Image (tube, rainbow, N blue to C red):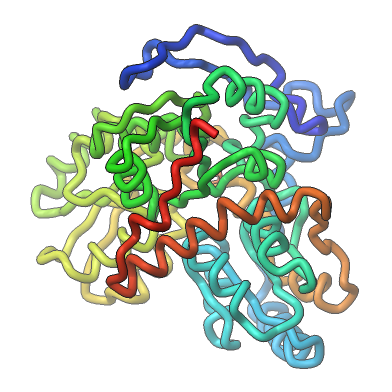
Length: 397
Ligand code: SF4
């Protein structure tokens, strides 16, 4: 992919079906190549190879302690708060919590950043998370450790092609995953995360709405199987979850017959089919805490292991298998872009104000609509309030 341009190197349509729920075999399809074979000439900084090359070295114990002290001081001085995703380095998770910030999934990160009084948010995660924070809090400063930390789902859903896809389906409500650019959000009716997608699509289906879903094909197919909603899909994938393998998972289950299997729905359908619990990172944490088991096999980014093990000291967690120990950047169950976040860059951006996220001000009001809908819907759900009035018919507008 020519990530420098933010577009797939090859994008081709393989056909689509309309009007009825469709299988992934006949969907509008965008094939995306994630490797950057010619970085020297492209100047790209966003391929996985570049991302791995920019993963910060592990600090020594002394360096780690000094960086943490510096960040604690700067957070106070700059009226700033840390918001970290479950997939980033344990140092950034622990420090966020210790300093009054948050470690969570992207839904709660968005809500927390919007509601917190701090005027500066330091978002450790990937770019769409920083953009979402900026859209929700345009007057706040949103800093990120590395602005080139991106996401294969975001990269694989360029606005021009996505907009054309939407134009082909004017009767459908456009539902996009959080892992998208501000421009794609501005083209959407609803934003969802993996923790609320089932509830929102179920509510849309109950109102008789047909859905255009983007960009994760596995999550979309899972939602369709669970809800029976009429959906057409963009064909994107998370390079981390797409690599989990069902055959190898079956073998690991044989080695650990008492283990429960926890799977993120960005994983392929045959992996999801082996799960004892399917859900977002928050749902996986909840299942690990509440399920009557002491061993778990976990199919999500292995950054989650830190929180799982910290919160469940008596339980054992195994990483679900990927393609094997072939050491390619696609087979290690860890997101290269999440791995780019490090303590030294958090300290640097706090000190200098570098890496402030910018979102085109003209996009913000429209990009905010689907996010606000999601936040209002999930808040009502959480408070046990009715949600039907929060689901206007938008698709045929
Ligand atoms: S883990 Fe997957 S979905 Fe999450 S940021 Fe990385 S590439 Fe995107």
